[in-house]
Amino acid sequence: MNTQPVISIRHLSKSFGDNHVLNDFNFDLFPGENVVVLGKSGSGKSVLIKCIIGLLKPDKGTIVVLEKNIPDLDNDEIDRIRVKVGFLFQSNALYDSMTVRENLEFPLRRHWMKSSLDNVENMVLEALGNVGLAHTIDMMPAELSGGMRKRIALARTLILKPEIILYDEPTTGLDPITGKEISNLMLELQKKYNTSSIIISHDMNCVKIVANRIVALINGTCYAEGTYDELKKSNDTLVKQFFE
Amino acid sequence: METNTLKSFLAETGKISAFAGRFFVEGFKPRYEFAETLRQCYFIGYKSLPLVGITAFIMGLVLTIQSRPTLVEFGAESWLPGMVSVSLVREIAPVISALICAGKIGSGIGAELGSMKVTEQIDAMEVSGTNPYKFLVVTRVLATTFMIPVLAILSDMISLYGGYIGANIRGVVSWDLYWYQAFDVLDFSDLLPAIIKTFFFGFAIGIIGCYKGYFSNKGTEGVGQSANSAVVISSLLVFVIDLVAVQITDILGLT
Image (tube, rainbow over all chains, first blue to last red; front, top):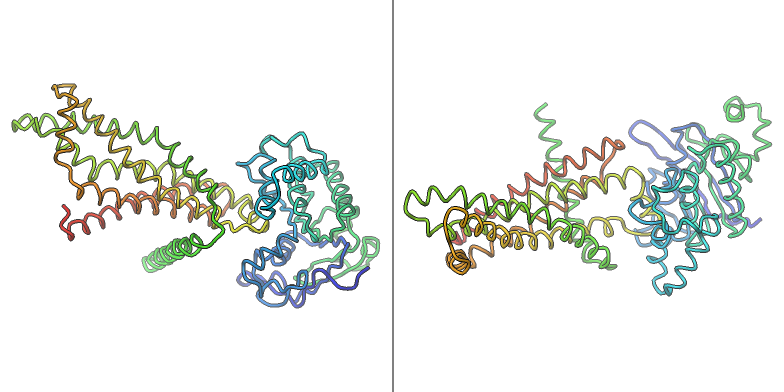
């Protein structure tokens, strides 16, 4: 495995008033790796990935993504990084006034202006084919089931062929079978496009399938780190509670 | 308590001003969202025309019917088209059209952007490398700023037509005579200030709707509040702008 991390976080702190969500958090993501950040609700997992993508500004620390320190970048520079970093929202965040086709075309048309219309169409069909939902191309998001919406959101995230993908609780709100399907799909697409991923989750079925490495985010810091089996065998009560 | 209310009022005013100021910074920088601006013009302008048109027609009709008895009493029935046209063109048609748009468009924009905010669609736009302010706010504010004057001009014409029908319910005025009398009293100083102020009405309606939606929170309850406060504040601003416009035209001697 390449030793140069694609994401390197050092001494990251973020507070909301008196609530210290992240406190001197350190973390590295290496190429081709799937790292799950495990933590209780409200522990700062979503805040962490929103700081990585530049949606939230950290109070302290550095977040180096693809060799650029995010807090130092202006809006245009952040936008260029964002093209290489996909983000799958917990709520899917599909544009509900647009069809599935328009949802997928939206990032393409804004970043691939010179592509011919045929190329855009082919890329949309390829992305939908990857998630097995080519037949939904002209449907509206409201007409789709929860699992289908998640797949479409995943297709939209992947359409710009990002190098890194940040997943915010990808299986929350789905039944166990659909959750497992989504987890397997994430793994399959990660192998196909050789992406690196940070997955925020507390769904242990998903964690078991996708994680190469797990980071336990407790009290705003990287409390424990290891593979699924290593952490499962841990005697630490705070770590054990996730596996019970 | 009153100090806190004043503080929050001033803080909110400051935030709205900063949000409006950002429009002039972002609006002039490329990339320009022509297609989305045209799409918004279609929804905001064309789709509002039936409501504005019906309201304008009824306004002209009712104003004429209700003004007639008083003018008849003074033997000034022939002044009816002129009086109605000055009232409609200078004040009633632009203000009522703006208020209708504040209700329809302001609430629509507030609810749409509010819903996008709480379902993370605005964040999704941002992480896909698109400036959501430029795509969502600049396009809508441009559309309201340029479409509301168009609606107001159409409203002038439709309400004057309503006036013609109203004038012929009890009396008899020929088509040619009505329009001659209606336009004879009108001057550019009647028309221009009335049209110019509608640009400001449109800008205010767009900015307030977008501001309330863009900073919506507290889930679906917040979306409702955004739509509601967008209508209340933009309607109030229409009257404030109208008041300022009247003072300016008065100072300039255009009354």
